[in-house]
Every structure is written in C-alpha cells, then in structure tokens.
Length: 238
Ligand code: SF4
Image (cartoon, rainbow, N blue to C red):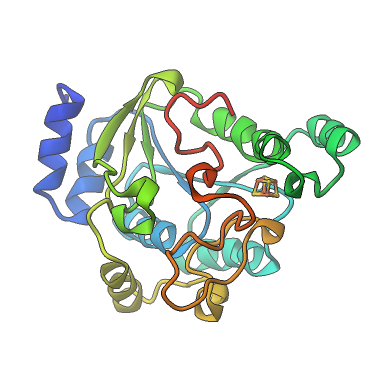
C-alpha cells in the first residue's frame, strides 16, 4: 500500500503525471476509491482509462429517474464496451414522492430552493450513499468547464464527506478530452453532437448556443452563481 502524505503533496505529485499515472497512483494507495460518472465526455474518458488499465476504482452513476434516454442507453453501452459494471444509485422512492407532494414533479423551475431540494433528493442523498466509506472520490471536473470551476485543483479535501476529491482532468482542455475519446473509441452520448457539452437531467439541460460557456445549458433559468447542483460544492448540505 502506498502512503501519501498531505493533500498539498498529492496535488504536486498529480500535476506532474499523465492521466494513467494519476489514476494508478490513487489505485495503488490501496484505499477505497470511486469515480462518479454522469456519462458526459469527461467521465467517459475516466471510465475508459480506469477500465482499460483494470484499476480497482469503483464506477458509480446517479440514476436520478430524470435522465435522457440517450444517457440511460449509454450506461448499458459503456458496460458492454469495457466489460465493466457501472453501479447505479437511485433516489429513495419515499423522498421522491414527498418532493412531488411538496413542490410538484417539475417544481424545480419555480425557485432555487425547490431546485436544490430536487437535486438533494435525486442526487445528493444517493451520492452520499455511494461515497460512504470511500477515501478518494474521482471526478471529471475541468477548469475550462465554467467560471465556477476555473481554479479546480487535482486534489482537494472534502472534510464534510471525509474524503479527498481527485480531479485528474483538471488541466485538460475539451480538445484533449475529445482527442482521447477518439483515440480509444470511447462511446459518447449522442447529445454532445447536438449541442449539449454538459449533460445532466433531461428537464434541466438544454443545448448551448455557439460561444456560450460549456455549462450554460444547465439550469439555464437560474443566474450563473447558483448553477451547481451541490455535488461539487465542498461541505454542501444539499
Ligand atoms: S438536475 Fe433537475 S431533475 Fe435532476 S435532480 Fe436536479 S433539479 Fe431534479
């Protein structure tokens, strides 16, 4: 088992490695690690890299019940392509029913509070279950995705979740991501080619216009400062 000292050391070490070695370093610590995938192109690249190297890193997706059909199909296709299992975490049925009673099925359009409540039930609570007991949480965050993500590090402590978050693609451009996907024949969501660089739940994602930021199509009716679901907000309660 490899031991890594501080997150600052880990940040420096990861910065000097390529993608394979970044992932291998985490796997070789011998501590439990998980990738959460939304099946977007960055997560597909990470899934491919983990699968091709047969690294002991779990691959998990949050099946919110509101995904695009294309995304659901891609989960199956990716499992077949790489001969892997993608663990599906679904929301608690009673919590979903309670949300619908209180806000309505699509109540998230009405207020930021209602939207956060939906993301909490359908994403954050299942995420908490998926991350339980993990030491490392691998994500596809990149600095180029949005202003909110411009300072994404390779490694950061998430004290509320008692783990270290690892962002192996932090310094990759979208062109780097596309080149890797093409080189390794990684299956991609067909929605990317229809103007969706970032894909979440179907009712909360629209195509972006030329020149718009990559995440402009997520919760487009809200202002930019609030446009995260809380998954990647350190210490978020929701
Ligand atoms: S992205 Fe939209 S549908 Fe999905 S959990 Fe959040 S508010 Fe609900």
